[in-house]
Figure 1 (cartoon, rainbow, N blue to C red):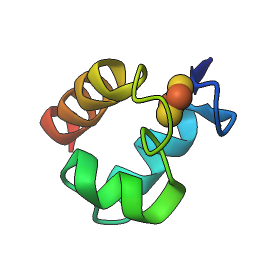
Figure 2: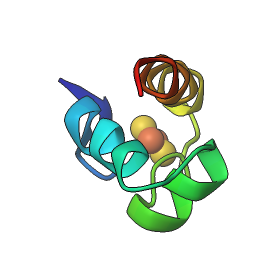
Figure 3: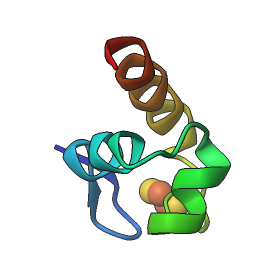
Figure 4: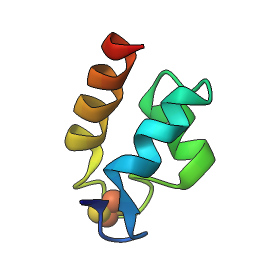
Length: 56
Ligand code: FES
């Protein structure tokens, strides 16, 4: 599922970024560019990051 339409970033890519050590929106933004354009995806991206952190 696409989370960030500006950069065509999926939830799977965000989960993988967390698995590789990212633990915040700032980390994932740096790695993938998520939420660095319109910002509409930020809230959903944060939820995905938090869910993935709880799973790991
Ligand atoms: Fe992610 Fe616009 S949808 S920055």
